[in-house]
Image 1 (cartoon, rainbow, N blue to C red):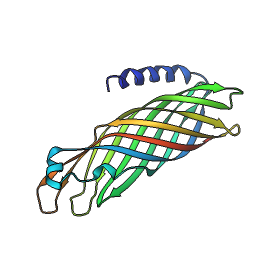
Image 2: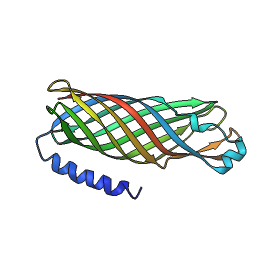
Image 3: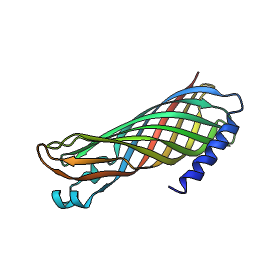
Length: 200
């Protein structure tokens, strides 16, 4: 996390300078595949014989909505994302509310751009497995993203990207009418995604 703080600060400063130029508003939709790195407490592994929460969200469909501003040098935007999955009876749901900045590197005729940037925000993790109490927690999220954006027209564009997030959201696993068995921690998320954007 020490590395992400200066990266996020630098991106913020670059974003402020870049957005001093005239910017267009845009809205977009994203779809991607998310895999989570889940860490379980020792107590949970002992009480449930190493339960398979690790695969609850693994290559699962992720949907997102975004809204922001963009100019020739870069963009900043807010994103809401939703993903849920289950495996072997263990169910997790993750929601992200993120603020991001990307810098652009034009290729050729400026209709194709590479992008890279930083993200900060919040992650909500829900543990809703059958036979256990529902539990949720909100933690921070910080990460990086990169990809390629293709302008289709003056107003429309498509993109493909990759985002990596570190988080600290953690939920408890408690039996119905029973004791706490341990905890499930969302350590990180990785996502490959496709997006469609429209300027207005």
